[in-house]
Length: 277
Image 1 (cartoon, rainbow, N blue to C red):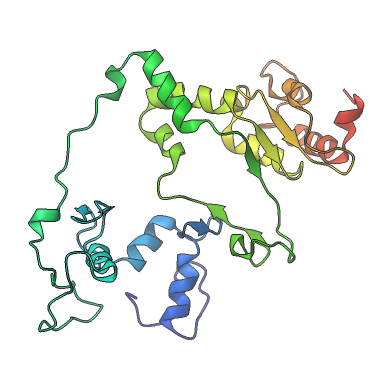
Image 2: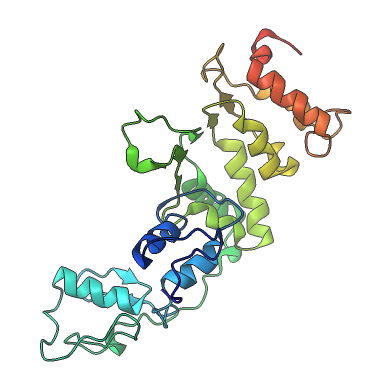
C-alpha cells in the first residue's frame, strides 16, 4: 500500500494490517462490489491498489492462450501461474512488491505487447446496422433490481453486511453509452424502450427514475415491481406514465418534493393496482 498507516483515506476507518485495508478498498472495485456510497472514489482506489502497475496503458497478449491483459505485472503472473511458455529463470532474483517486477519470461516483452489500433469508424456505419449492434449489446431478457439481502440467501458471495453487491463485469455493455453524445442518444432509446425492468420492492422505482432522469424515464415501456398486494407479473407502465409526462402539472417527481413523496407512497401501498388513479 502507498502509505504506512492502515487507515482508509476515504472513510477514515482503521485496520490492523495492510491486508485488511486492501480487502476493504477492493470491495468497492471488485467484480461483485459494494454500490457507490459517495465516499469511496473508485478511480482513486484503483490507482491506490495497483500503483505498482506503472505501465497500465500497455496491453499484453499471451502467446499461448491469446488472452489480453492490461497490466505488465498481471501478465507475468498469468504466464507463470498457467505455465505458458515455460517457467521463469530460477537464477533471477525476484524484486520486492514495491518495485517494478522484472521481466523473467523466456521471450521478449516487445513480442507480446499489443500494438494500438486506430478507432473503428462506428458512426460511418448505416443507422440500421448501428441499431442492430445496439440491440445485440444492450438488450437482455430482464433487468432486476434487488433490495437488502436476507441472511438465508444461498448466494452469500453476492452480498456483504446485508447489502446486495453490484455486479460490474470487466466488459460492461452500458459503457457504450458514454462513447459520445450521438451514440448515447441512439443507444439509450434501445436500452430503455426494449428492456424489461423489474424491482424487488417499489421503494427502488422512484430512486431509479430520479437517477436516469425524465428524458430516459419517458422511454420506458415495461416496468414491474413487487408489493405486499401484488407480484411483478403485470406491466405497470400505464400507472407511472402520467408521472413521467412532462406536461402533467403537480406530478413532476424530479423537481417537486411533494409529488415524489406521493408517488412513493402510492407505489409502496399497492393502491396503483386498485385503479387508484
